[in-house]
Image 1 (cartoon, one colour):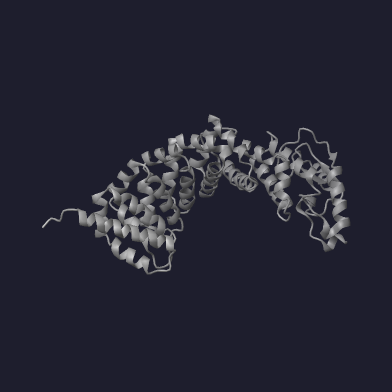
Image 2 (tube, one colour; image 1 turned 45 degrees about the vertical axis):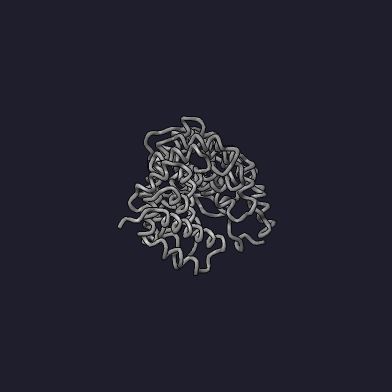
Length: 396
């Protein structure tokens, strides 16, 4: 196939001429160029690598036979060429660039972009990167060095790294996350969470979900639950950051898989945050209100969670709002079950629920298209409220 008829893969393009590399050579920085282009660059008196702008300690050029072979394959095979299956060596070379202590953050960002260009069109891309050991490397780059303050370049690189980490974690190998058991690495996690962008916070919340979902990382999940600063950060994320609050809800819900974590979250005030989130759900059209409600139902196994709900001025009202909504029934069953839990032993909760219109909501729910199980729970709550009402002395 003629070269002019094909789109040149990013890896095969000279960064200087932006044309197909004819004679690939690699500098000491790990960057590859077409020989004629880099020779012209050096002949003009430049003593740096054009891409990384690093000063060349050694200006010698090493022929890149692997890349030459791949380019020849591409020219022969055309559209049948698989850039991932045929470029394992190139990916390994890019991995070395990420491992280099001399490479700048900007250069490492460019390296991740090259990896993206190599793998985005192949279904085997993630698997290939995983087999080459990219996941532990990226985790080490993210959390290996504890810094008290992140530079703008670090933040930009962390966003890209986390995107790749989540892609590779989708393969299910969560045990690599156990590196966060080390105090210094957990400290780095915390710094990223505190100082990172909304995108970084959302990605870290997804990592917390992954940790909480696996039995292999259950000990790490407990360690995260003992980190009061992290728990406060998650709660604050739900309370303040609307663009990341859904991710915060999911992370909190995931951590609740352990009773010890539930105790710590309640002590840090998670009930008020979740109830406020639900109470304001319709106003902001928030999508995670059902998840927040399911978490509340789980937390109500704890006596201090029940006390927090009753003492919240909008606590019972928030639950009642979720009993029946014209647009959807998701969350209705959790709302009803939560009300059954809280109303069984609390006169104050029963009186507040009746005063807030729960009976009307339940009757509407029974006439709706919700599930039979939800209707059964609604009838149980109605009977509970009626029986308790009949038992209580009436003040004339």
